[in-house]
Length: 199
Image (tube, rainbow, N blue to C red):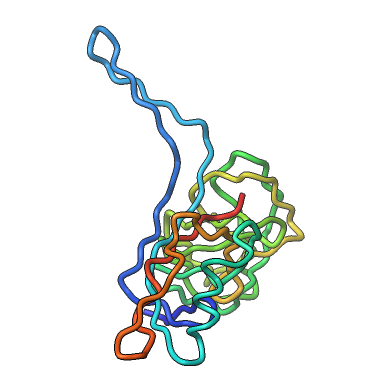
């Protein structure tokens, strides 16, 4: 697994990536279950970091300063098997809000975008995850299935943003610990860090 950083400090594994999509269940009088969703979703991350003398002050300040402002970081990946030869493949055709499939131009790239890979589109900040492998080693256009469905339309002039180009825009959770714990005069723990995707 690749190494990821938050405010200059290395993120420890295991870390949690949680999909927050509120669903509502109702059981009818005939005991049938009806389930509904409003169609809104965001990613939430929870992790700890390794603090060093170089990152201790920034790690502490990140938990208490500018809590109402958005920040960015590279989105951690849950799979390490993505072999696409570029971080910015071209979108082949326009896609409208609400769809969960786009077509990628595979004429000048190679490799497989594997299911479980997080990505975004160059036209908006929402993070998506591939729900099936997309073999981009052929020619022409290749379908890419993903979750959640598009929150904004995508034009054929846009690109996918993969790997280091997949940048999460987030708010720091207000539940974050706002202190640090020292052991023998060395920073040992800045607490659990919670981030929520900025929508």
